[in-house]
Image: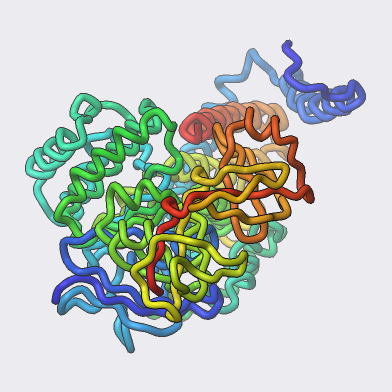
Length: 265
Length: 344
């Protein structure tokens, strides 16, 4: 280990305690895994359904987050309008809101008796307790992660390259596609990965708004919670699967943010 | 007349300035930091909206009452102090950016880009990334990129200020070549830039125009103390008398064809002044002014000795021999032949 700048020893001690605090439960969990039964446990029909549903819905909500979040970040970072601070605070609200409350709010909007639910029902669309509801719930909680990281990146990138592009004759759309987006691409990628991770772990809003129907709305976290009651070994095995997937996601984020750091030089 | 006709005010920056740039001429805008030079360029480029005013190029109105033309429709390219090459594009793609944005096909815009890279002697850099370039190389590419956009008006914001001194002469020569016959506004506080690149100068200070005119005329015969300071000249203003001029530092004799009684100005190079620590004898044809030294300022290889109204440049050896310090009394001597006298 090289010491690049002097960090007091007591800081290192506290940091080590923090690292142990985070790692210990994960390590403890792996000691509870019944390795002999691991693969049968995670390959039951219910488990497979849950894992595939989780991956599918998380990917879909990541797409929703990028499609909605990129324009939101651009408007927040590049324009000024009355009430902008309030809008930013509201957009970031799902970040601090207990997910259950998010689920109740979503029900109030899109549920059968909700604000828009009746309209949808007339059109023959029922959102609540469907896979669509899972995607909505996940997008609702994951969107702020993308907006937050991308808005920050846009502000750091500044507007000077965009100004140069405009004086070279590029229309606002051309500036967006050929200058702004490529410059903040690493932030979009890491924001998307973060959103995906948040969607993958979503529990409260999903359960409240989408329920727990196997193969339709029962994602991996819901399946794990359910199995914990009936088959604790299966729950631990599935939990380990989710840990591995999450680790992969974190690793990917670190790599893309590494790209950010390099391109900033 | 085609060319730029500009007048705008920005209250928040205490900016109120009118400027005309005839087509095909290069105008240098000289002024200290904070005088409004960057504001002027931002207004013309369309990166800043004025509180009031109008600007037009021929029949095209950039801004005016209820009119606002966005930057990309103005045909005004800007070259800044920093090259600001798009870091994610190669050099060739950077230069091709303007033609591409104008709707040219990929092949045609690449050809145009190569042409302009050759024009700035940077064709060998075409495949490089901006991160691999030196400051001088990057600025060459930025010049090519601006020209490739085929602007009707080119704005240059201290284009040489951020560069290594070793490369500025080459780039200045290159700019002179590519600016010939173009309409351009170059903002600078470097008199040399104005003398090499510009047909006309406009000196601005405190948000307004202080004086303007033919480059050489303005810089050799400044009318305003501010211009004289930029041009590195002493300026004494006063009333013309027989054989000289009556100024705040006393009567200065100089060859004169001006009519006595009119207002005039005397310009004097600081290197033409000899500094004495003790009072020298009077000599015919030599002006002698007693001054109190206010400051000694190292400037490259000379020491500038300042007093309230005049300043003189000495070599460090001369300055050391005189043993001057702020507050000491000195005598400035200069020949009448070195004084340039002109009417105001």
